[in-house]
Length: 264
Image (cartoon, rainbow, N blue to C red; front, side, top):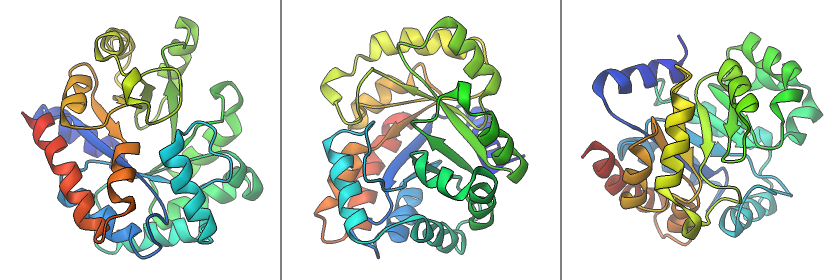
């Protein structure tokens, strides 16, 4: 059983919701990434989504775009990202780590080589926002062979046919994008409408479904978690640590109230 499967089984048994924070590798500094990851776990993170900086992050809003741009300007690439995961694993062998990014860096290396590199570093899953599931067979097979889950995305515009396909192919967890748009647009979050959709998606699968996009604080996290197996928080966290003197402390302070709200 993978670390992701084990973690969600533990959460289900304890009747708790997953808290999945996203941070961009290499931002707000090269030295901050691993300490921030550990701080997030200390504050109650169940899974870490580590953003792989990319020059054209089309699915991301301004906050994560700028974060990615800053990291790219610092020279952050796949080697740095994998090095961070390996260093994180020196102290934490249990918390799942999922890389979130774009297809190009994987295509450059080839699916099998990238999957092997990720697995050896200690990565548990990879989410590629610009890889349509209809075109993902080669990647999915290569990742599964290496023991790495290909995390898939569902959205409010996903048809019933596509949702059925996603349920069938999903590994690790299914990421539900709570509205059609880019990350960080919290003013567009409608927990009621998203909840109805989440209930429909979850009713047909045993794979956990987590909700992301627009979750910015304890209240929005708790609202979205009612009908999801967990929530992802990204832009608000990235913003909270961007200018912090101590990014790890800022990450811990930001996430702790969300953990408390989910457990309440």
